[in-house]
Image 1 (cartoon, one colour):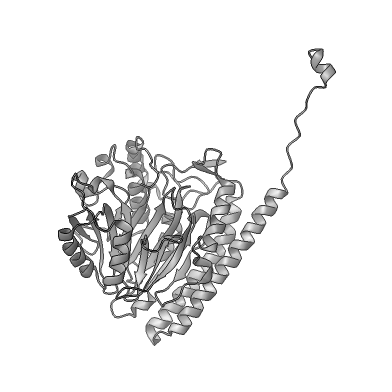
Image 2: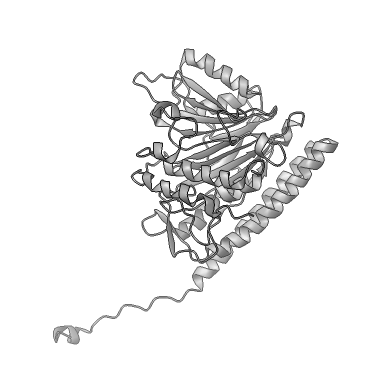
Length: 434
């Protein structure tokens, strides 16, 4: 994986200090990007979301079957009426980031962010279908306040800043709207803030989540035009940890070589202690079978999890689905909890390097296998049974690696030397004032 921080961006990063006054809230922390196939090496669009919340720690991948189109989606465990990112059988993908600045005084009733995304997966085939759904519900009303990112199997890639009865479209394929071929959002809207579609740092002073928007933008800029791959987004965007000025910590995924600091505060980082799942959708080129659309799914904190491929073929690998939380995600939650700082706002980094080395070895092998299979199926025709078998195998390999890591971390903790017991004065010594 390339290092994403040559010296030419340090001047840009210095501007990030303007954003230091932003405060965190429980659920306002998602970071997303819509990436046109025009700037990826294989011509396939990408869509990314890190999901952050304190109230829905346990996530799973669910099969959605009641609409016009069948879909697979990441949901809060056991709560399938709302989805938070998903793909349907015709290759339409959707995710969101909460943007409360889009609310109005006369907010409407109607579907909220998660309910609306399930509705879209059940009904939409293209980005334009989604635009028409927004037009229809502008009249009937929604309770949405979100930036919705969508891609389709026909080259569509767009973001919609969406209020209860309004929306604004940002086309990632439009060189004017997206000169670098992508659109990044965190938890503000350019519509409500009266900003350009790609606002610079000097326009974001005092706007919550601006630092994450700038950091994600910087990462994608440094990958380079025509070269933003699924591997770059899975590894370098989902797991980025940088300080308040936007400089990645030494030893972290985007940082310079060196030892990690003893602990890393994650209040303003992309990868946080409140990150409960992440997804990178790898779409298809026009003319390819939409069932090859891949939802690379990280249940739990991505720093402690493995990206597992999920295809819209009517099945979900067992380690990803459970109404109490997918098993892979539950292990990731345990690993993260063992490494949280005492205040819960950061990560103690002891053994993080070992964890990454182990888990990412498996992830790299899965990505290589899936990309090779995807190219073969694209050229020679798909086999749904083979896709399902690959999906099952990948889920099991990831689960095996997560279980092994859990055992190793437990053994490492048990091998630590116990602290010396406290000493107490005898009653005679205490009476003598010793």
